[in-house]
Length: 262
Ligand SMILES: NC(=O)c1ccc[n+]([C@@H]2O[C@H](COP(=O)([O-])OP(=O)(O)OC[C@H]3O[C@@H](n4cnc5c(N)ncnc54)[C@H](O)[C@@H]3O)[C@@H](O)[C@H]2O)c1
Image (cartoon, rainbow, N blue to C red; front, side, top):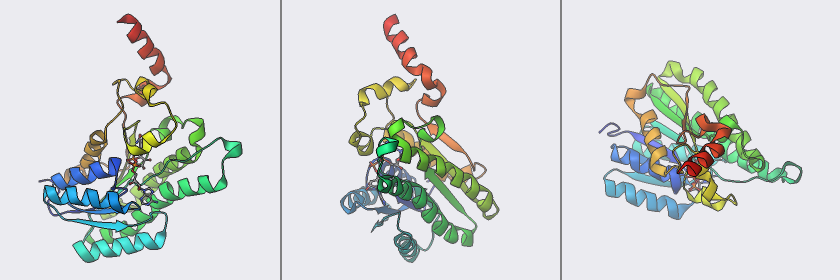
């Protein structure tokens, strides 16, 4: 098994994409630390990890709180003795039109996504450099590559900031044999996506593959970046989007023409 005996911290693994990554890594032999505000969801994921046959630790952690993230890292090191992989994945929705957007919404969304990525990366990297090995994977979004929908201003700003953070950390950590990469999912069927007001029936029209992503699609990309064998891949952003970025603004027309031709 490719990740046998390794230790992975996954934030936001109590639901959706994070849970799928936890289970994918457990299948590859990794022990999993699940950090989430949602204790019930975290425990459900832990139960599933243990059924697969590796160890799981849960921690109620707000990734936007530096002290809580520091406590998480200390607990993981005390329990497992090492940190090999960090997936900074926890995230929330939140937006509105610019002129009405509450300042608090902007601050919270940026804090959870961008500050959370920085806090978890910095504190995990401090452990990784000691062992000269690490894999850091940040969850961005295609909204960072093609511009967010107007009302997603804070989310787009945070996800774009994550790419800048990723590139800076890549240069800084390369000498320690730590890779840093980002995943940019397209629309992926999770509770987060379903909590929004957007009409999901049209989302598949933006994707050449003609369907929304599922959590396993994203977990497989996260699996690749976590592998020891991916050690020369660093500083990259990988869209996992069924071709949505490639299609861009032509996708709606493409699907209309295709359905008319049938
Ligand atoms: N679903 C999509 O279409 C999509 C697309 C692009 C990017 N993403 C990103 O993927 C990541 C996972 O999203 P998802 O769709 O699986 O959503 P989800 O709501 O299913 O899962 C997110 C998890 O993060 C946790 N969380 C939220 N705030 C937290 C905090 N401050 N501290 C710790 N945990 C917190 C939630 O409790 C939840 O368990 C997010 O970063 C999201 O922005 C999702």
